[in-house]
Length: 281
Image (cartoon, rainbow, N blue to C red):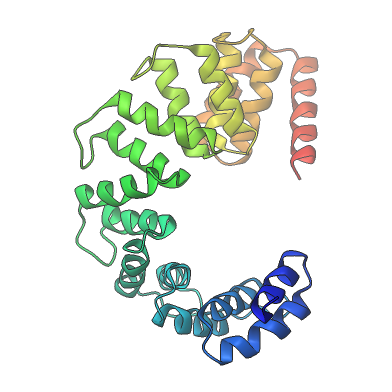
């Protein structure tokens, strides 16, 4: 077994001291994969003190050798100003190098840069091109972003069916934004047949991940008895959770519910909300 593979195996089992012992000499000899892995260890603080600057140093060495994973993460470090001064143009440069090698995460991030006009001129069509490349390779965030572009008609003609298709693929992979957006499409019958029960299912998936908008929407579905049996206690629980996340639009629904509920019902809803938060920790 190669020394590099020994390092990989040690890393996978959480033996970071051994992984470090195997990766560092190889990295210092110019082994790109070892350099990348050593960068990851510094970035995450695994077996070494967390050090973004040291992580960048190793990622750069690997990236300069054409390692797509290192190029992608180095782009991210410049994008977020992590271990280096924030520099969108430099982020774009590294994202592009990795994206052109087929790295789906870099393709997604490059799409974001074009959509926002960060480091490049704003260009929705170019954003769509990169999102599509990543989405077709199964990248969940790219699928969600591509769905949004179709939903809004940004860079492509507005197409609710196409939006629903991509939101659905992303939602199945747990992307909250896609779950919420697809839920709205089922409520409104846009691109899909109107289906309140499916909307409730999607809102619940996102709400259980802690998304305030989904919690508010799920609460309203319970309040209206839309796609689910009417239940003021459940409605109050979910809407109050959204209020705690400072979702302003949820406050008025709490006030509406409080006027219609007994003190005992409100107390029960509050208890359920406390228990839900405790369970989520």
